[in-house]
Image 1: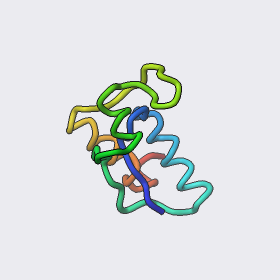
Image 2: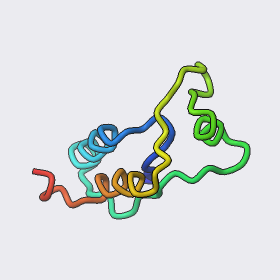
Image 3: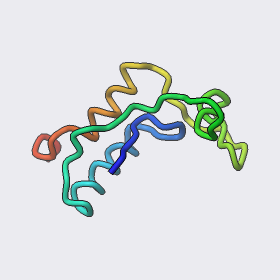
Length: 84
C-alpha cells in the first residue's frame, strides 16, 4: 500500500481514521508513509496552492506547517498498541 499524509484536504482526524482502517480492515501497521509533496501538473498540487478542491472549487484545509505534516505522518505510522 502507498499511503500519503498531509494531502490537501486532510486533517489529523483523517489520519486517525486512516490508522483505524489500516489496522482493522487491512490488518497492518504502516511503517512507511510519505508526506505529500507538490509536483508539477497534478490536481493535488493545484489544490495545495489554491487551497480549493480542484473539482468543486470549494475551500479546503491544507496543512503547510512542516511539524504538523510530520505529526500527521506520525499518527499513521505509530504502533497501534500506543493508540489504545
